[in-house]
Picture (cartoon, rainbow over the protein chains, first blue to last red):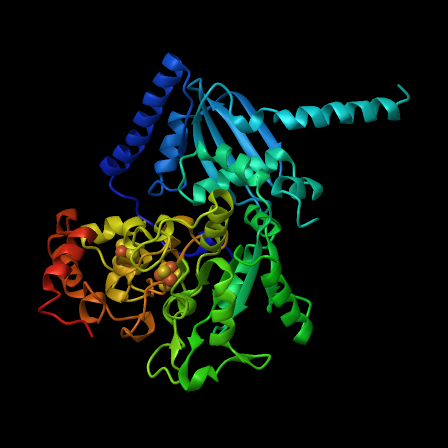
Length: 139
Length: 359
Ligand code: SF4
Ligand code: SF4
């Protein structure tokens, strides 16, 4: 018995009606944020960490917001998985720390999550890097 | 890394990319329960912030708080916060010893007078003129009084510093008191817990760095963002409490089914802490997930309030009688309707207060 999941505790989830209403509350919030994004271009975000979720709730949420056509992995102090869900404009962002544990998790309602964009200062650094590369390659 | 570097510059020198920094801010904003959009504001503020000087004093304590804190030194996002500070004096970690260590503290105090953050773990003994804890010939109470004068704010880490904790427990032979009983003219943040959740400690430091102020506090001086709700409010076993399903022993069918630990002495209903949301060991789990009830370690005098294995209904914690009724009613009718909400409990307690004196 070496892992937490090996401990023989059978965790019985909350009754389905209750679990369903918890997930639906989150989905409804996403819906109104998505409507705002469509209408006035306002981005929104839901922090999944603090929300009370019973075992099983997250799976239902993942099924509603299943992986769509875009996904990316960022390698910065541990990996960050980003995917656009089948609901376009709704992204699922999971930050892991270097031990692989989830450090933060968000549903983002946006055209493109901030973490995927190149920060403006990095563009300037990129230019310097390119000059150095060209020099190294004899350009 | 120069002391004059902004945090952004110093992290860049350590090879931390801007995206990594954004990620750190997103995780920290999440721990602080700030709206997710605040991560960008936080990143901008933190990258410009100067690294504040931190003086960390340890008195009557077991070093458990330091252990908890240094667990967040492992290569995690939280460890970044320590790179963001200039930890100028901390006996547990510093290389200097003896007069050199004391000189480092005095220099840091002089150079940063009025601006440094004073972190204290452990209770402070005031019995017999404070003779029970002395460092380099000075009593803890004298060092603390002097150091607090030049501090911008004081953070009491752990239940011992926050409320006296175990050194203050009966019969308290050294006259141990909380830091807030010595420091009365400076803001004191109580980060209680035995030990406190490491992310709660780093969260308070991150808040100070980002906003230049301490977070909003509850009536016991604890940051509301972490201590605003009870363990019970956020416990995943709560549906079983609501249904009146209680484990009666640690190895019965109820325990194996993951039912509520109320009758096995869980103090979750009267304990304010972030264990159920932030969790321990980098978000792995919290004690109730391991099948043990909450001890109430972030509450004042938790050590003197009877057995850890006695149900609240029979113990000496406030609100016990009301909760006892809730539990019994829950068991009898087995529905969520038996639950008396915490606010309702508090209300009932207040009504009872004049008649029922708490020990
Ligand atoms: S009494 Fe304890 S185990 Fe039961 S629901 Fe409350 S916090 Fe969880
Ligand atoms: S669950 Fe209770 S006793 Fe355990 S660490 Fe959290 S507050 Fe302390």
